Every structure is written in C-alpha cells, then in structure tokens.
Image (cartoon, rainbow, N blue to C red):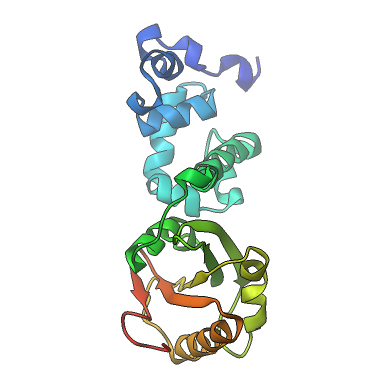
Length: 232
C-alpha cells in the first residue's frame, strides 16, 4: 500500500473538525491560520493528519512570515509538503499580497512613511539579498503599483537612476517612494544609501516627479531618510 493510500485527508476528520466545512458555514474569518493552511495542504501523512502538519509547519517555519520568507526549496523539504503543496502555499501568500492593489477604489493611500513601510515590509524583510522597489503614487497619494527595480547590491555606483523612473513616467505618476532592504536586519542608512537618495531626488526634480521618501527596510523596522533629513 502506498503512502497516499495511508494518508489522512480532511474528510477523514470528524465533521465538526473539518476546516473546509467550517469555512463554508462560518466564513474564512472564523477559520484559524492553521486550519487555512490545512485546507491548502489537503492531505496528511500516516500517523499525522493534515491539521498536525499545518501546526508543525507554522511552528518550524516561524509563522506565516517565516513561511513567506523561506525559499521554495526550503518549503518543499518540509515533511509532508513537497513541490505541489509548496507551490500552493506560495501562490496563496502571493495572491494575498496582490489583492491589496486589485481594486482601484480600495488601493491603499500613503499618508506617512509608516503607511508605505506597512505595504512593503512583509515582502522586503523576507528577501535574502538587497532589492530596490519603487512605490508609484497618483495625485491622491493612492498606490498605483509596487515596482521591483533592482536585485543585488543597491548603491549609487550600480543603480541607474533613470531605470527607477521608467514605470512612474509610463504611469503618469505624480510622486514616488523608493525603498530598499538590508538583509542584515539593521535598517541604518549607509553613506551609499544617502548618496543614492540625493541622486534620485535630483532626477525627480528634473522629471517633475516628487520623491517623497527613501525607506530602508530591516527586520520589522524601517528608517525614513526624509524624516532624518538624509539626502533630501
């Protein structure tokens, strides 16, 4: 008999314990994070049902943030997951991120550095190497698009400033916010960060696109260069 034949499915659980039925009856908001993961995973292992696998996954990966931060291969290696289930989990997390910008009338509005950081910190703090993103805003400071521009070392000698403005110009943006992460977790701006900020601000003035801020993202922390008067 194969492992699949011996595996535990959600339908093998008591009806009152089945996450899918509870979601149908009470709505997704009433279902716990572990139960939502169990719905995505669908099947368990011999001696370990799908809810137990979901609970173990949350514990070993450090919660949803850890699951999001982990590479595809790292998720695949978790016992009871594999490539198909890893793809489902990663896809669900990405859909949640994209939903935030799907409806123009419900697009987030940026009123402060904290608003901008809240949009990108979950994603950017999970990156294992530096990335530079541009938050493109309309006349009402609503987010038009979050645009990843660079991956790798982010400094004034390697970043072509003109590349940052390609998409904002195409989108007729009024203003942008630039952000990049420090994989070390320490968001303290470097001299290179400040030099890059100056270059971006000057280019924005020439293009009539206001550069509102440059955020450095660390581990659940961020620094606003605008607030600190660095490069502006």
